[in-house]
Amino acid sequence: MDAEADARDAISPTIELVLLAREAEARLAAVLEPQGLTVRSLAALRHVAAVSGITPADLARRARLSAEAAATVIRSLERLGAIRPTTTRSGLPVPVVLTSAGEQLLARVEPRVAALDAELFAGDEGAALERALVARLPRLAAASDGE
Image (cartoon, rainbow, N blue to C red; front, side, top):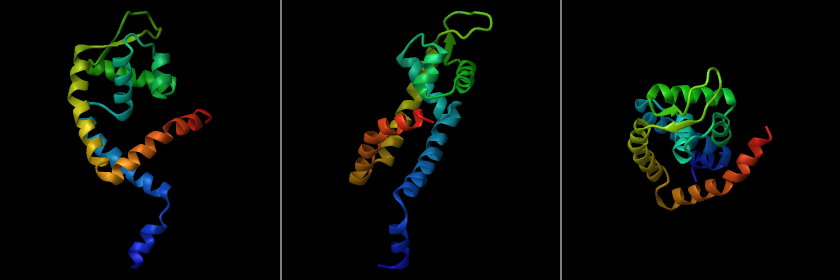
């Protein structure tokens, strides 16, 4: 074994995961940014599509955002024309729904995200990593709830 291989073997799984996540995040941003989206806004848009008339508080909870971050994402998606409020109430948060522009945006982005998933998790190693990540998500989510 050479020194380079020894060094690779000495790297912790946590460091490897962080490096992989950075690469995935950069590649995902390259897909989303031209559409005016971020990872957070895509997650929120998916939730609005799944639960028509979702309240900002429910959206924040489901998307794991603070109330302030959810409000920012909602304003961003409204500016894109992807969502709209169901009613208008002066100064009060109101439920939001997906617009036809939001449906079209998801239709453009989702296949690209799926293609990126397929590329990043290709092969036996990628599939094993995907299974391990999915299996750990509930535990990681529960741990972050305690923060």
